[in-house]
Image 1 (cartoon, rainbow, N blue to C red):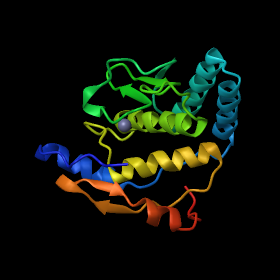
Image 2: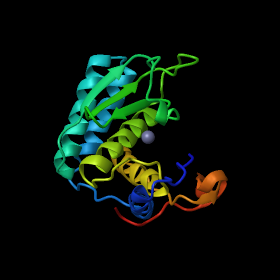
Image 3: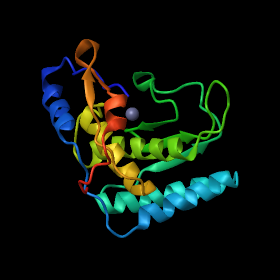
Image 4: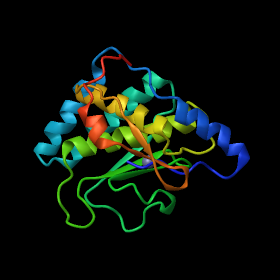
Length: 195
Ligand SMILES: [Zn+2]
């Protein structure tokens, strides 16, 4: 995981810093998202694309309701389309278009056509939904991949999957970016912080 470089435009910098600082996300307490995630997993195991799509739509509807944002659309594709948003060329498994509020996720990798694992798929769904939140809830002018963005997406993912949340550690990288320090992150005990 690598963050975006801080924007050059001065009027975007404040939003970028706010996104970077905001490291957590409120979570629903009703167990609805973990239950829907399990149905996504079963549908993926059964190879039932229509059911995967339905469960993803249910997930996004429930999450949008909780965060009080308009529901975003979902398209589940079998393989990565040839044309993807160039500005987010690092998005290997999905994308989000702010103008149409549409999330697309694909079930096979672009190069080797291998089936995307459930963990990667759910993590992508949460990542793209966090782009939706950046525009619709937090009102950022852009949805940057900041440390805060990745941490918010991880909070949602671990909650939905029912896995313990880890604290993420970051290292400086070129051009004012940050990259995740995996050895340190993996060494640290699961965080007991809630939400
Ligand atoms: Zn992204």
